[in-house]
Length: 216
Length: 216
DNA sequence: TAATAAATTTAGACTTATCTAAATATTATT
DNA sequence: AATAATATTTAGATAAGTCTAAATTTATTA
Ligand SMILES: [Mn+2]
Ligand SMILES: [Mn+2]
Ligand SMILES: [Mn+2]
Ligand SMILES: [Mn+2]
Image (cartoon, rainbow over all chains, first blue to last red; front, side, top):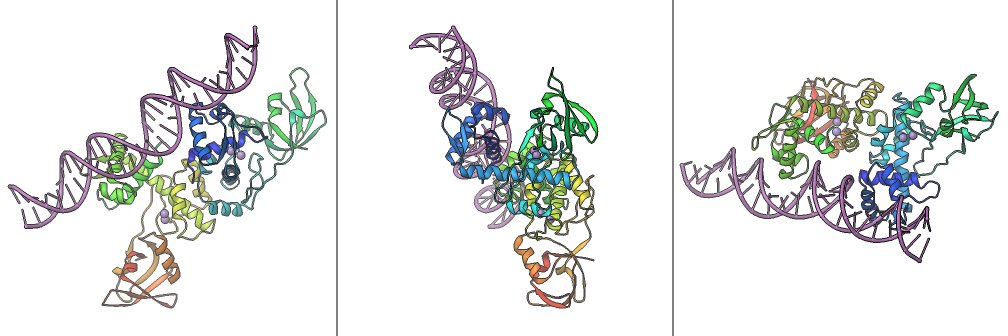
């Protein structure tokens, strides 16, 4: 088995190398709230265990077994988030920190039964796909609101920023997962977007539009 | 907050000093699967934090704040065991190790909501009382089967040994929580007990009778 | 009560995961 | 291509939690 620290590194490497990119020491240090020198030490250890491909100075990617572990942790994280929201009635902005702890509960039998208990949900409370017990999932095809033009629209299916502040702001504006939106206007000056949600006119900044994902 | 190791020590001290006794270094080492010298180190740390009363060579007991923490961990342990059995359909002999991990999930809000979700259960799958959110609980008054005479009986409400082997054995004999039993005979030679469970005659050793708890 | 046994603590070492500061490698800029 | 800036690694420390072996204290028993 792997330590908690190792699991967190694998997960971060996974998230940083999603689009085929290679993760850098500094990116990992930033993401993990640690120092570059600490990252280097851990990369050596993970390379020894053949969980990552590491070339000094050249960044890092996951091996097949490293990726399997990372996806399993993400599966646990998202299933626990789903549990917290759907069964214990937490709000979507309250669950991330708890799931950060719960994702390290080791039993796979436990998580498979939890999955079954909840009816094999496909997406977590933030719209992120939940890998099945074989690590398989397909991300749905989403676009940012900022990429839309007037009269474009769709269903809100995800967020790019998972911070409490952002999620609470969306809540207040009624911009939650599943809601249908239509762009009615775009301010030229600062690219603010004006849109309709349930017949209500809402204005959001370009920053917000950039982090709000809608199905196409 | 306290570390995982600290929490485990506090829990062990609590269990060892239940009947007003004082826990010894060696007892703790045995219980925690560690060495006496490691225990001494940790006791110093816990004493510094004023979570225990520690006099070198004289053993250890919990302070009020130490006890509060210990009871909270036990609350979490038992609620998670209840969840695993009642919601995820695990058997009573399968849940202890998982609960050993889950009891360290820090959020109290989470555990309070879990408690509510399950309808505020009073006892865990092994018959042990679950402390409420204020740390209050009352142990029910139980006697071992070995303390009974012929024609005595009652409802199985707990076990003293929580090992998988013992719990599986009880399962096989139909001696599970809630079952009504009546002693029909006691073998003089080795104090084996013959009893009736659901009209079935079952013979158990003195060892087993000693670890099976029945309401009076 | 003096010797012996048992329990406990101390001393010194090791592992994991961190850190700061210094050294080195890579990349960007003149 | 040489220099400067940036990124990364190495060196050396530190804290938590553990270990073995040795020293010390307490309990037992002759
Ligand atoms: Mn999350
Ligand atoms: Mn999520
Ligand atoms: Mn248990
Ligand atoms: Mn239990």
